[in-house]
Image (cartoon, rainbow, N blue to C red; front, side, top):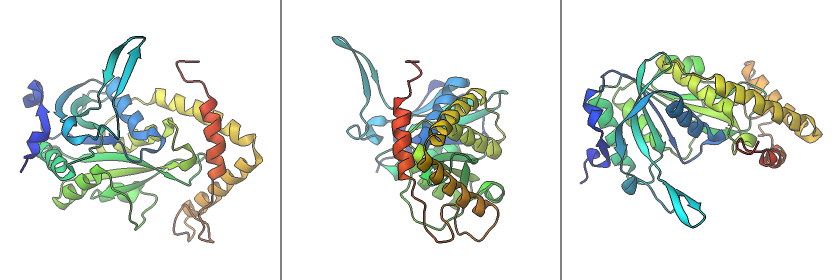
Length: 304
């Protein structure tokens, strides 16, 4: 039987890592609404100081046929090959507080071995807490603050931040298994599920990344730079609001989502912020279709 440590390779500097640090995790793959995790991890790795502690074996964990690496073809030759990575990094936040960041692709294979490997690393470095994020599409309005559902055993965070606490079945993320094993062992763990407007799920929604960073800060005390993301978010929402305001049907549907959201948040007897008193989930397919066309027509940053 393969050992957990067979899945990763420690870097030369891995022996000098302080103990007692918080672990922050986010993996891309299944259900990353608003490209929340992708934005979050890219922002952290590009904005903060960090060094790789451990690298996981992509050849063992990744299905290349499902998520193919990206090449750059330059006229007559391949000038770049971008391989998917899954790493544990030692990072420092905006004021120099160290933490560990697990980021990269969500494993396609060997979830049990991967979970054991993550727990082994948590125990090796005596990590104080584990906080992870994911984002799912939900029929909620973009005109309201993004909500989160909190899981794990951090009851303080659940009580103060979790706006929706359903009992339901849903497809799992690899980090769900990690959380399940960690909480069973009593390790302080919090998972934040961001509820992203489903008509913006296929976009890069900067406000979702900001909410993810704020959630991590609440769980860990880490401080992150968010000014650039917040500015991008304001610009993004201005354009979305302009599109909605110019279409009567879109405006009516957004108002319906707002009414259901506000009724739920005011403490009225709705079982969910997603449905009305009639128990029906409002359809916003036309919002998604119209905004998809609108957002696809926007110039990319490198084309502006």
